[in-house]
Image (cartoon, rainbow, N blue to C red):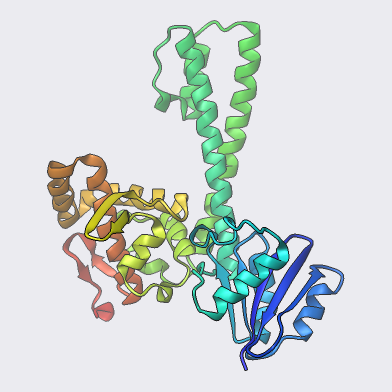
Length: 344
């Protein structure tokens, strides 16, 4: 008989609740280290189902228990607020709530990645943080020029030559010189590390399933393909393009009550890096694809630029879905022509 096990996971311990029809609930708290996890695993049965909220160490926990049970569910916390809004917030109560909703098959699942894609996703997130830090420092330097009434475009400061030329063109105070020297040193270091990360990300992405398919789409390069593939993980997890669009957070909010139904802005749920990358790829892809460009211009004329680019991104995401699902490789994306061996 199936047992439903809810797990409230922390960094140092975890509380479990075992629900089984006709049996009393079994609730216990075990240490995550020092043999506690091993003790829990020894008592697992092949027909057990386990659910745990998506936390920093949830993937590690799931990898340890997965070989011993029928099913492991990682809960998407942003879609399951029963625990967060509970007036009785205890580990035991949370574990029982998870077990109960698992037994009713009512838990929203987070998409699970394998260990390699998790590590690649971490690399991508680190690169994104370094890029944002570099942009912030460049903004600081641009602000120093503005403060002295000097008009300089931010773009010219991004290159080492442009930075040095423009900084040397003005007589800075001693304190400002020190500040600029430190910022320049940090900018050079950041740029070097960003390039190193990009090299590793692109190298690893090339061995991922679906890489050749995605880079055959005009507008998607090696780095963008890596972001897409790590975010999507398994295309088989998505029933249709609409599910994938919802996962990227580019579907509108819907509020329905009786005969009234309203739609709002996009949900923006999910990974911001992946969503931003999709939009950036769309801006490039529409330059090459007459179909995407015509669609963009049509929506732009009716609803404005912002809504047009999101609608076009949805179209491109549909193409990404079917490209991965059907193993398409484009010979000419602008004419939507496939390589003969990949036609479906």
